[in-house]
Image (cartoon, rainbow, N blue to C red; front, side):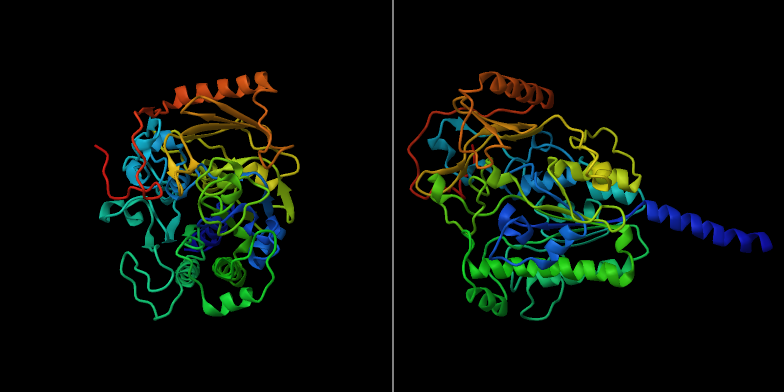
Length: 475
């Protein structure tokens, strides 16, 4: 008995040391939040003090990317650690969502549910002893078998579509007048409190700031009285963002209250660029926000559609106030969390990302080990009056250089992002060798990943519905 009494404290110390080596991980994802919508990324109108504080206490990436220009494929990349050609998820919904029949190519068919054979990040971490929770927008399949509770999350409440009077899956009671962001945050904070001894993985995918544009009246009134700045002028959108920011504040405050901030990595990002930057590009869509100096917005493979805020805080591990220009992307979350958790890589599942853990701890002296990032969008995203947020393209970024190849006519756009962040000067003709070099990388990647290409179509007359064909099925 004496030996046991002596052994138990030693075992407790070992367990505590192991827990300290395996941090809690919280990933907070905004929906449709643009790169410059956050104050610490440039906005002078929107107010995001809690996200800004996260950056001051941690690390801000200036080249953080999503792996797609819209919601569903980015979420698939985050949860699977894979590029779109491996999951078949390239966009939102079926190909008949927009009028491709009037265009030169028939899109590649789109998968709308994350394939069952894919081992999610939650499944991998759960297998390593992590408690797992999700509260918010799932968007990777409907129905009982596709629910996140069947994809590795111990606890999961899904909700999106409305910000007031919202539905939840499973059905969950809440007081009348509750705002969805507040509901999601309440569930997240409760989860943290019940799992404070860790380790846990908490995924908080907000529906804000996605349409419909609905916000708490008192916050709308606050921003209605404020002067517009830099293309940011919508008080409802600003109020929605303020509620997402409040969520970040409540979550980090709970960590501080429980004394677990030093053993918890908090990540904040967005699933694609902001809904704006269209009008100046001749795209007939409403500008709700402005991603300037980036080009275009959500739905585009230009920087405004795929470059997003990416902020990390891990007190005592990440140097506070750090800024990194290293490119990172959605696919990197999976291998990074595996390294943090000491978890095994899933068998028979390629992970396309790289771990950025070493860079988080020493951003001044390390790099994220990657040669290039790739995007493949074999379909159409429409707007009004037969204009398009994107047509079928493939994209590669290597170093400061970015190449966009049209899959309709094979034309190239080449930009040096260090010198031309707004992608105003196409250098493909002036720098043919650089264009050739990047195209070779893109061709090799597509061949290796077996990326399917859209096929030729004989264009028909455009339908008079702003490019949308929601009720037709592809034959």
